[in-house]
Amino acid sequence: MSDAGEAPLIGADRARVSRTSRVFDDLHRRAASMIEGFYTALPPYQRLPKSLVETDFARGTKLNVDLFFEYLRRDAEPSEEDTRELVELAMERMRDGTSLPEVLDRYRLGASFIWERLRESASPTERELLLDASLVLLKYVTLVTGRIATAATQRSHDPRWELLERRRGIADALLTGRDPIEWANDPVIPVADAFLVAVFRLCGTRGGPAAALRHRVEAIPGVFLRLDAGGWTALIPLPPGDDGTATLTGLTARMPAQLPGRPPPYWVGAGAAHSRTEIPTMFAESRVLAELGRCLARREILCRRMNLQFEYTVAVSDAARPGLAAVLAPLDAQPILAETLEVFVDSGFNQLATARALSVHRNTVTYRLSRVHELTGLDPHRPADAMTLSAAHLARRLESAHFAP
Image 1: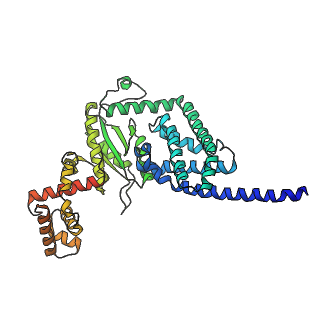
Image 2 (image 1 turned 60 degrees about the vertical axis):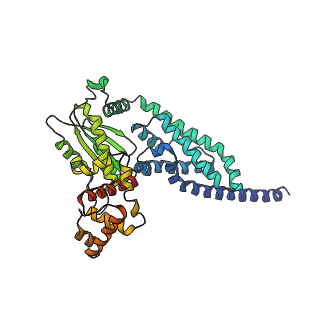
Image 3 (image 1 turned 30 degrees about the vertical axis):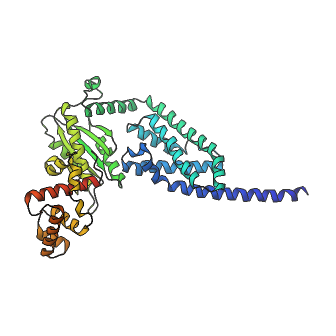
């Protein structure tokens, strides 16, 4: 009688466990699909290079989601080996200059973000399970952040870690115009008097090649690196007598070969600072040049002032740029005219080349440009007006690409 009474209970338990497991599987899949929105919505990730977010952070977030739901299903804490890669990724971010509090805070923000969105989209049954699982989430976040904090404490006593911190401090001082006096005569970290300032701006979809390049640049003797929102900046020492040409050639040689037919994974704005006091000015210029490469999707990776004089002038005209971009507003409802003007500008104001590029008769180009004149009040055939239209076209491209040096 006793055995007969227990059988239905065991079957009910199995069915309940099976239903719960299916719900957790569905929640797991939905949580994984939220990773992309996770980066665009949280400020800590908006300040980081997109390619870095799409590689290291995407990997870290997926690991966290997978480990948490495995913890939820098995009711067994992840082992030290299970979380080893997560801890190493966190140490990498600290190595790049992110503070421990900021690294740990990302776990709080990330868990809250995904959990809230799961709860908002959950059915009544799923919400009940999520409520029960919230304690497990708290334990999981506490466990992982505790292991990261422990690893960071252990690393802080490593002389190599201290050396990295000091090098970051030197980079910050040089780039902001402060003289790193406390390190100036340090035999372990010599600081050159002149540098090639190279600002790297990353393409948002190809983090791998850029990361490989960064490691190559880090290997240059005497270099200082600083990560920023768009990529990173390298201060490469100039040897005596080098005006920057030789050092730039050496840097270029370290860049991986660009694949034919594919856009560059990064752009480099570069210029020589012949004294420490020139570094902030050259840093600002190189940021503009690198951003020009990104916004204009240049085929050439290296961006130098001598090759981008006109573009640079428009780019640094912050007050005038929005007004210039508005010059072409009358063409917004005329995409064919806008395209014709764009090709005309890009072809060096050559009507025949424009006609060939668009596969139309030259007279058609003449007619379309006359319509541009009518709508904008600027004649593409007059040199002064043509330059204004060219500047307006450039300003539009920069504005649409969110130019932000």
